[in-house]
Length: 150
Image (cartoon, rainbow, N blue to C red; front, top):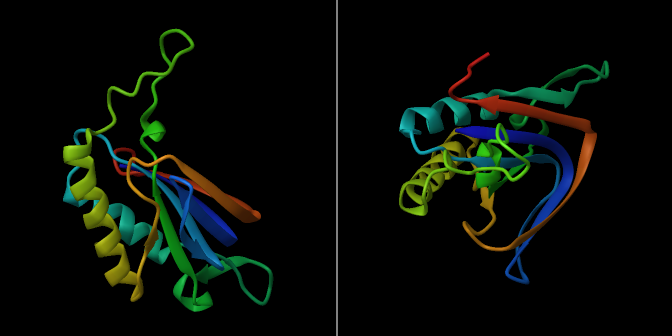
C-alpha cells in the first residue's frame, strides 16, 4: 500500500462533477492499493500517518502532529501510485488491486485512520473521475510504502 501525503492548508474533491469533500489544515493522502496488500499494510500506513510530525512548531521546526494542530485528513484513492514504467512509455497498472480487493481495504484504512485521529476521515469517491484541489503548505510531500518501510 502506498501513500503520498501532502501537508495542506486546504484541499477539496469534486467527483463526477459533484462537490464531495473539503478539509482545511491537515493532510491530503493519495492512497494506492496493491493486489497483495492486507489489513496489516493499511494499519501500518494509518499508524504512520496519524503520528507523523510535519507541522511547524513555535521554533519553525517540523515537530507537531496532526492532533496537535487539530488537523483533518482527506483520502483520495489513486491506483496510479502503482504504475510501472519499466517497459516503454505507457505505464502498466498490473500491480494495482482490482476494485473487489481495493474497495474493502480502502474503507478499512479510512475507518481505522479515523479511529486513530478521533475524527471522520473525508474521502473522494473510489473509482470516480475526480478533480482534486489543494494548497500544499511548505510544500511538504511525504512518500510511504508499506512494502518498503524505510
